Length: 65
Image (cartoon, rainbow, N blue to C red; front, side, top):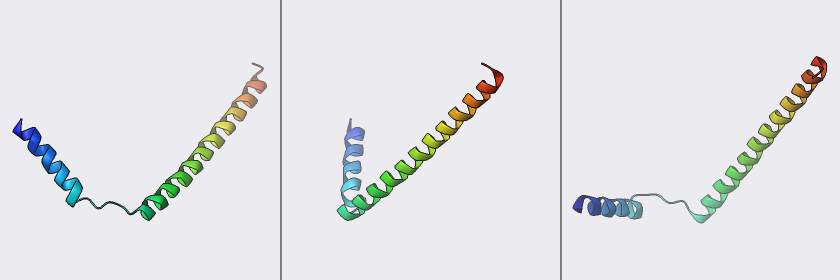
């Protein structure tokens, strides 16, 4: 049990004293960047889905199915 307690104490100490936490402004900036990147990736995937749907509908129309 002392190993578990020691691990928790060391982890707490590391989080408190050794981790470099971002400032509130840095956190806001990186959050905005992530949201913009998420929007771009979503738009690209949506576009690829739309194009593949239209291509497959065209192929099925040609094949008469």
